[in-house]
Length: 160
Figure 1 (cartoon, rainbow, N blue to C red):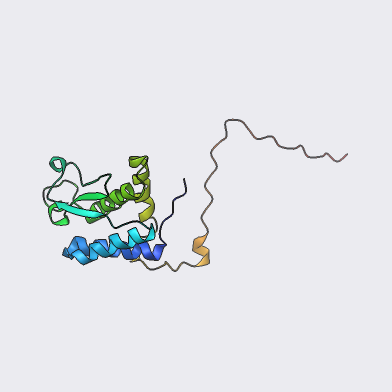
Figure 2 (cartoon, rainbow, N blue to C red):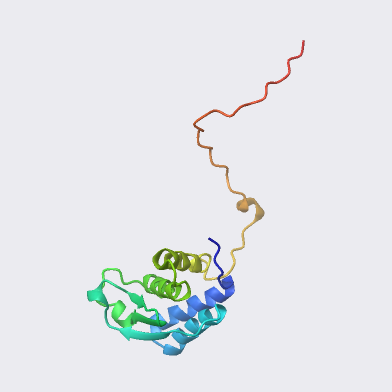
């Protein structure tokens, strides 16, 4: 399945806004991120409601048919959860936006949307393209797995 996503630069900006919101709770950062995603997909910006917990702490977010999204606020995400990292909260936001954008076949497509949105965004080098020499770009060949049936080889002609 091919999926339309914003370019890497736009995704990095959205990711930066969500990270800033998780750390500082500035609502304008969250709004900028959500508006940028909605604008790309030509959708109305979803209404977001904040909660201390959902489903007795089991759920990070919910999306409804009318376009309303319920999320656990980052302030409450950090407290009382076994898995309380910033990345997991941001992944939850992407997952719920995936539900909002791709309403049919919800879970599988929302997971796929969230994973693809992060692809090439969160790099170890702080969002800058890596400068790699040409010698390091070549990947070493992996040994091929043994086929179940040996490949047919043409015989060499014999000289007499």
